[in-house]
Length: 190
Image (cartoon, rainbow, N blue to C red; front, top):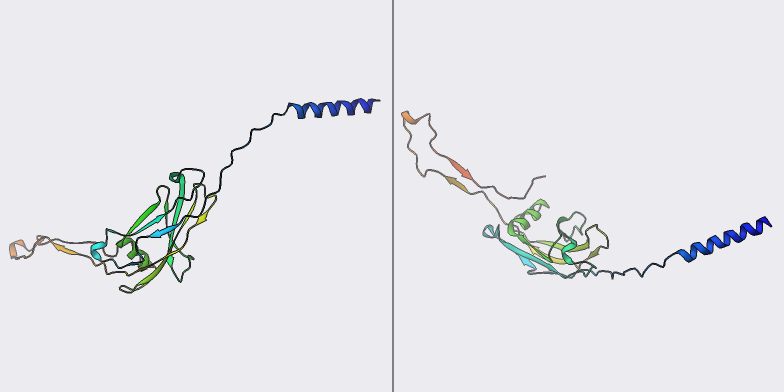
């Protein structure tokens, strides 16, 4: 008899527990994003020293349509040689906007850091990977190929005086000052 009462109490407790639970409202469903569509303003770029600080290549991509505003999405731009197949890419991370630009100096440094020669066009592969800020739900764009020709970026020498006349009385004084600009900014010999 005692076991019947215990079972009855147990069943009553289980029934009470189930009846006291509130049904959770339907959770909001966020649709998945989509791969961004990448475009470039030019497929062949041959910058010169005059283009060092000018935007010579602009990348634009479509909104990946995540469940949040594109200003809260992380975009990873990857650039590698076509032969490299993104095994050792140069990267740039953006968290706002759907475009970015590279100056002539930026592209020059990328190519020279890969070890290529001045004046010879190099084919670069470029892609964009989008994700939420925490790196979840990654989508990779199409790959764009761009031919870039690196240029010589020599130093510019400047002098304070164009002519100097020395004398015994001024022999211990400084006669002139030379200054020069950096060459190949962004390039690091490895």
